Image 1 (spheres, each protein chain N blue to C red):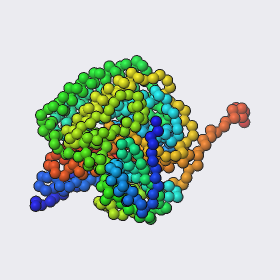
Image 2: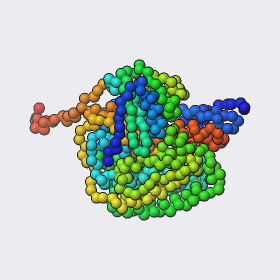
Image 3: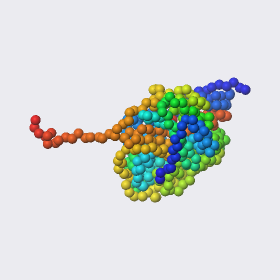
Image 4: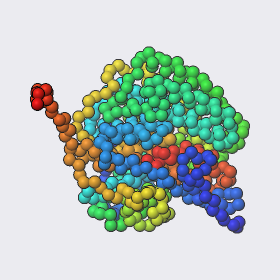
Length: 138
Length: 359
């Protein structure tokens, strides 16, 4: 069985209002997760109510764009937002409890901020050994 | 108003096998506020998708946690299978369910032992862990490993269990069930246990939902939600209902977990009785191109694997939201108003797994 998962793209100015609507509808904030891609950054805000899974996706052109915090709506969002700040270096504005980069004690600052170049499909080739030639006397 | 002081709790504390830190704002012996902090041993395993291909990442997923190792692997595989439209053989679904429920029993027995130790009931702790050893023996006999099962695989399972062994498992589970009944009587009826756990650390239904709590923490507050109802693996083929409690206190969380022990043994019996014959895996060709949020129910609650692939061997992103991460906000709600002496036990009632959280 494939679970139905709704995905709705939004822009930063719509975010808080949309999240507030979910709060009013008594959806549970399931997670907030960030994905760094070569050409953009995606932040997924996932909600659930009675196993109905809805996902709002914020697309950012780069990591300089300010993202409004939703922690004034869902208090638990502060943990996800501090995590995203500490791992991806995003500027999330107005977190109700801002750890200012000390939520995660990572050795490398913003460890997830870099993105490797796109990887081409790898074709594994086995070196062909010509047995006859190998067996030939030199 | 009394003077307020801040007591640092952790990251190293006798009750915590793994590091988590709390700043406890105190008024005399009473907790007024608790501010958590994690990230002391963050491993950055999600970043490994850049180096390991999507098949190798199964091993990484299984190593995120030593307690719910198999369900991590299962969730990862489930996500990849959904992206790639892989039809997993039905027998593999049943085997996955069997190993998941064995994981749940051993995890809950581990937790019950730890919580008994926290409220000073040493013999109950030892009994719980003694029984848990028998579950680990079954896991070892069927997978070869006691901690890391190594049995999850994209497209099915890496191993099968023969019918003779399945019969032996039923006999062993019946034996384990008898012993679990003995300890559950103490957990649920003993006067001193009730004195320590009843009415302490109450999480209301509304708070549990709005703070994003999951698993037994959520169900102990009267919310009927269990990701197994999404019918992944073989959960759609067996009869069961989520175990619930209403009071939302520490005792209710014990009640739910004790109830889930017996629910798991029942599920194991059903799975074995209904286990179909057939292959346990299919060949996987190609690479994942798409995205999916895989959600399953670990012993501690809902785990989410967000997987995104672009058609190459390496995923673009693997993001894991573990149940402990989701339950940390609830700690900050249940700690204010309790005595300092109850903090370790309270922290344990969420069944924290920092290894998972610091994936």
